[in-house]
Each structure stands twice: as C-alpha cells, then as structure tokens.
Image (cartoon, rainbow, N blue to C red; front, side, top):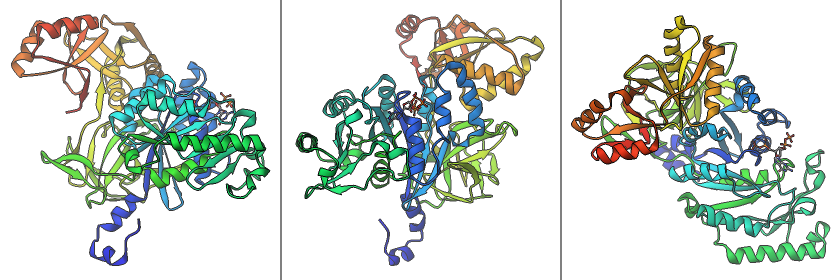
Length: 543
Ligand code: G4P
C-alpha cells in the first residue's frame, strides 16, 4: 500500500493519492430494527470515536412512533452525528454516512449512497432479508457499490446460517463469502470461527456489560476450544465451517469490488461482538475513493482522487442542524485534491464563487472546523441557499459531475397556506425545501396553486413541521387531482405539440422543466401510445 520514497519524490501527486487511499467512505443499509443504530454506535466505539454507548442510541429509541419522527428530526439538529461521522482508526480514515431507515425517505438515502464507496448491509439473523433491505440493496447495485454483510443479533435465536447465506444468494444474486462461521445462536451462541485465520473468537454473554469484554481469539489447533465449547458444540461448528467452505466460493476481493460477492460477518452489535472484525474488514477490503466521471467544459474526463484540483459534489442539504443558528449545511463529497480551509470553490452551473471559511467535519461526537480534507471525505459547508443538492464544486468551476436524479413522486398534494396574505412567503419556503430535496415542487401552468410531490407520507409531515417552525407558515395539504408526474423528453416540436394539447395538465418543476401531471398511470399509458415520440420519464437528472 505505501509507496517507496523515490516514487514519492518523483511523483508529487502521490501524497494526495495516498491520502485518498486511506479513506473508507461507507453507509449502512438495513431494514428498520435490524440494528443499524446499534451497529453505528458500536463501530464508533470500536473505532475509538466515542467512549461510551448511548450517544447514538438515543436516536434509535426515539424513532419508534410517527410523531416521534418529528422530534428526532429536530433532535438531529443538535446531534451532528446524524449525517456523517468521521473517525481515524488503524491508519484509515473512516467516513460513515447515515441513511434514514424509513422508506419514506428513500430518495434521501439514494442521494447519500451516491457519496458512499461501500455499504454495510445489516441483517437481523432471525429475519434475513426484509423488504427495505432489498430496496436499498437494489439502489447499491444500481450504483455498483460493493457490499459487506453483517448478520446481527446472533445472541438471539437465529435462522440456520446456511439458510441465511442461501437467501443472500437467491434474493440478491450475490455470492456470499463467509469470513466467519458462528457457533450456535441465542442462548447457545458461543462465538465464531475466523475462517481466514483458523482461530476461534469466543463470545461471552456478559462481554458487553463489564470491563473485561470478550475473551481473546484462540487458535483452532490443540484443544484450546475446549474451554469454550463442549464436544458436541465443537463438532457442530467445525463441521459447519468445513461444509460452508466447501459449498461457497472463497472470498475474492475483485469479485466483491465488482458487486458479485459479499463478505459475510456475524455478530451482535448490542453485545459488542463481531464489530471489530467488521471494522477490520472495512479497512482491508472496502474500496478507497475511485475516479469519478465528469465533464470539463463539455468534454468527458475522469476525475482521479489524486488530481490536484479540489472538486466534489453536494449530495445532501440539511437545515437547522443547530436550531439556535438556523443554519443550512450542504454536504460536499470531495472527489479530488486537498481541500484547505479558506479555499475558494466555484459552483459549476451558476459560476458563483464561495470562500469556504468555516467548513465542518463531523467527528463523531462533535463538529470541528475542517482544516484539510481529501477525496472521500465529506465536509459540511454552511450557506444560505447558495448551494443545492447535485451542485458540482471545483476550483476552476469547470468540472461537472453527473447530476443526482430526482424520482417521480408517488404522492402529489396541493398545498395552501392558511393565511392568504402569506402566499408569497409560501412560494419562497416551498422553493427552499425543494432545493434541499425535502419534497418536490410543481407549479401548474394554470392556476396559482402549488403541487408538492413526495415518495412517502412522512415527507409531508416533515415539511409541514418545518414550514411551521422555520417559516411560521400554517399550511393545509389537500388531495390533488393528480396521481403521477413525468418529466418529458423528445424533440422540441413533438414536445410543443404535446404540451399545447395538454396545457391544463402541464406544470414546471423547480428548474423550470416541463412536467406532465397525470390523473392515473393508465393515463400515462394512454398518452404514451398517442404520442410515441415523447418520452415520459420517471426520473430526471438536473440540467
Ligand atoms: P435500527 O437502527 O436498524 O432501526 O435498529 P436499532 O439499532 O435501533 O435496533 C433495534 C432493536 O434491536 C433495539 O431493541 C436494539 O437494542 C436491538 N438490537 C440491535 N442489535 C442487537 C443485537 O445484536 N442483539 C440483540 N439482542 N438486540 C439487538 P429495542 O428493544 O427495539 O430498543 P431498545 O429498547 O433496546 O432501545
């Protein structure tokens, strides 16, 4: 991994590339309740970023009910650990990106995954692959993100590990390559065999509750297992380990990086077991930042992490992280160069220049001013509406990364403000929230109403809550006559013909792009047949 000194001197860019090479930027995906929050916290503990359990947990506990969601959103304001947590461990710099667990926020998750180089998929050992796991997995596959699997809650009665591996193979079309093999589960859970090192990693029930933790791993040779397993248990785990190695393909890093294989870890996040091993696996196998395709003055280029020019893209905007300051932070995923505080960066599509004087990096427990950052890192840029999700930033302002897509919303509602004198105010507020990506905004070409679109109902609730608290606007959502929205594509003449004939159903989005609002999916099928040259698109990349 490390370079020899002569190469260092010969190639002044190596410093940058080396810095990027030690970055591991990843997200955790899971079905709600599989243990993402608990695992996050324990990764931070294992990585030395926090000292005691409890810091992240509070969030998980509060998320149980719908009304609590609002509270949590507000609490997130205070808890900076919400969006990205950075920790330095064992020579690697880990950036853990948080993704909302609830499916109503899947668009947010999708955008966050564009900034991740790898993902940890957490499965509940008793439940296997659940619906939301599958959805999120598909997003990862779409973006070619390699996945590590953590089978959690082994301290509870679990499914047969062979069945769990089979399910990964059949439902995800992914080759599971176990790096460990568990000895029992639930009350009979005794630990796991480290298949690569031929060691046994013992689990002690009380390991999580006292200072001693779990015993050290022991070699499989000799009879050191005897202290941990009775004869029958020993025979069972050894046979399982042998069988699984015969039945599964050996772990191949290349295949993992290409998205065909997933290394499988077992553990109990709650009992602090298996988490060190997962962290080690992330350090060893998860990829560092790679080249990103972009255009520079219209020409295609590959932006290398070691390129000198500082560049990156905004994948998320979060308002009110600190409610006392009403701030708005744009999260910039760096793609190249060495960023230093005070640097000037230009936004590609607007040409606006920003002096990034107070960037923040998110060390697990607190915000800190980022003095420098490299490809793979995420920095928060406080701003008041200058930056939008999908913006490309670079020193010259000429680099443009592929935009982040917008997806056709699944629910469309009309929004009105209770006090008609505040209608103008509402427009600004709705635009602000749409720029952050909270909801989508459509302005019908006829009439003065706004239509807001979302993937899930909770998005409307968050929106109403924020409109009330941040903008002092009481709004009413009403059913709209529309069920579907589609962006239009095609030749200008065909589009004009279509729009001319459907003026009452046309709207514009926040970028002034034309959108067709349909009353049903049947209607989309109908107009698609009648206007075969017009494309009715479910997603849009920002122009
Ligand atoms: P999520 O973020 O994926 O939604 O899951 P979260 O970590 O909040 O965990 C969901 C529940 O599963 C929590 O229990 C948590 O304590 C439990 N859990 C997580 N990991 C493990 C594990 O390895 N073993 C066991 N036995 N339980 C685990 P809860 O009762 O819903 O909440 P709480 O009362 O414990 O906070």
